[in-house]
Image (cartoon, rainbow, N blue to C red; front, top):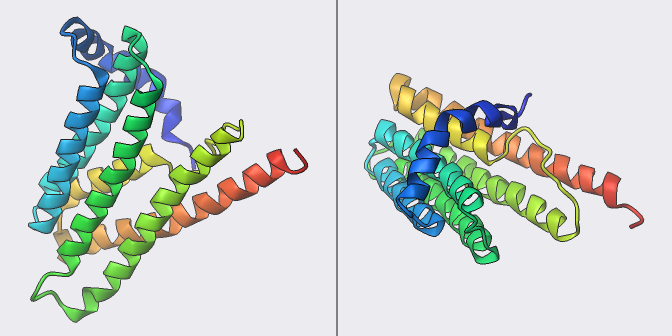
Length: 205
């Protein structure tokens, strides 16, 4: 499955005018990171309220801010080690908040008992998503650029945010369930893929 990273060039060309505007207005990249995190907190709350489409929209907006903070930091010369740490930390917190909102969606009073299994699916998706990010961070700490895998952060944001925005709870929530199962399975597979990749490139080093 092709990665969304191949689309970065065209996307950057489209958003560059906004990036330059943010730099002119002297918006600090850490402020963009914080704003994106606030939008993601809203996404988690909207999932809790069953407003799945609006939650999906907020997930996508939070992902967009994640692009802008990095671009502004690099283009303005404000990139820093703290900024990178702050961005990565809030990214992980954002994913946790969104998945907790989804757990709440399936754990409300009056939900069919048949949906209880989705709580375990979401728990696996949380763990898998965090492990995908952790394996890359740990590999980078060892001097390896482990960006392999078909379910990285961009793919997760587009799949969950886009699916929520366009389908909501249509067909008794079937599309959302399929998305969450897909996330649970593919994040675990991506984690395994990264472990194998690091083994192949770091064995004996």
